Image (cartoon, rainbow, N blue to C red; front, side):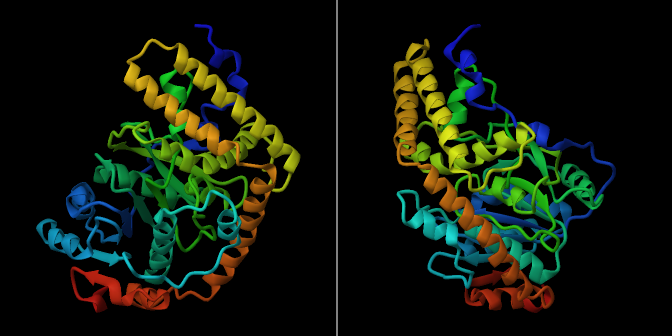
Length: 378
């Protein structure tokens, strides 16, 4: 089929999977713990609790919004699972100040999400516990079985990779813009991500910046070429990416930056952290791509309500893109590169012994931690 999208296919890379290795599990590996950032009620974590029970490994839940630590602890007893649940509703963790946050705070793109904070706390708690094989698992991931995780952990045990993500066989984990590209017939794969990924918290010096696609930046933070693989399978729960145009608006800066960097990597080039001319060119291509998608949606044979939803979301992304400048891209990336050094210094002073209790005390979160078994046994 000939379409606007195919004529302008060079505007968007629909896959970055050539940057990672597809590795069949060599054997059964070990896992130390599961880290789940959650904003939903305890019932949402039943799959995660069952997996933890099957693996006989502890689960650390970082709770905010509807998620309540005490409710999760109560539910954990039904699964015979060791759980550490941390209430972050009003707690403030002792974390380093990041320059990238300042760059976003001076723009229209400051993030209100706490997902990156939770992932970073998961890294630090794991370091304190001395865990070397940790599964980050989002609360909308289901269908993960013990054998898949043990296999993926064995891939990490090989020492060749810093992260091993699972293949998503369910609803694709993409940005709103990439979902629109797929629905309009464009090539669109899913990459590995923090939703289901095993990492070694003691080996990595990277962190998750507070921006959409924070997991892609995490992979890049250990320097290029990043060493990552995909092994094992999982499923993500279905949702409607076009239900609220604000979603596309909130994602646009992180999607633009991550796609721009990964497009360079696809072409065998090193990331251009501070090249304003490079970002001016990519922003032009990104906006052309959004216009192409809008034209495709307008011409598509689809339900009128669906067309309106998709159009509104893409217009929201286009509106956000209008405020993204090469200067902002440069400011964020230079801030993030500086933050990697700040994080490295922070890690040097953070305990890697003493258990989860000492790590939480260092973070100022001991008073909001809830344990399913006595704290001193963790």
